[in-house]
Length: 328
Ligand code: FO1
Image (cartoon, rainbow, N blue to C red; front, side, top):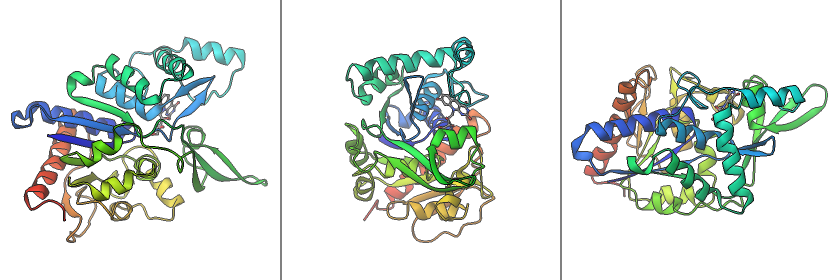
């Protein structure tokens, strides 16, 4: 079987780690391949280095090197380089990069500087983290640089656009966003393998990632949405909300910025043209229409087992939709 998933950072990575655990504990699913299409809209250039937070969170989480408490960055990292940069007065200082993590950014920036496409760089990094041995192919959504910016009202100065990371990390999404502007997205081409992975999949999963600034950005890469509408695979998603609130991050602020309520039904509406199955928390009442098929499950990934159970439920729903006749 071939599963393709679209993913942002922490929530997506934890769900996919649970999926791999579920595959390992289920003998009938042996040999399943997983292709992950990662969001690169959060990417940022800092200190001359290209940083890809969602891709790195996927690499470190699936590769066993993530800082579990933070959900991002490397386990057991130190901060000598950041300390020295601060003493030099280098900015910004609101984004924390650990020393081991810096290694990734130096390596990536060196290869990009030599003209290597991001997808090849990610493949090198994936080899370092042993993803292939786990049956995983990680693809960035595009090789084209894409950057999400947030239009905010500046005190007495009208509006200004700031980088997504400044809004998310520095301001903790507390400054109301008027809209998101995604530089480079309209002209971005899907990275090699992305459309094929969607068209040839047996199952497509949307983990509980941010529907606006993670999954929403991947869907904005020209061709991706059409591939999802056209795939023969059932598409099953997991709501990122529990009782109408994001488990982590600021999906509620992002939904508000695009004029939507923070509900699982509103998120499903963003995927309405291709979503076949939708997992929502028991705390989120949502009626089951003909499409998508709604399944209530506990969505909190409070332990590795809970993540594996959630991923297993998503896969089971996809397989039951497939057996019921698949897509029209
Ligand atoms: N998130 C934070 O809240 N604060 C940070 O200082 C921070 C640093 C950071 C460094 C590398 C990396 O890969 C991720 C990092 N993140 C940090 C997480 C990340 O920026 C966001 O959670 C995502 O971009 C949103 O998906």
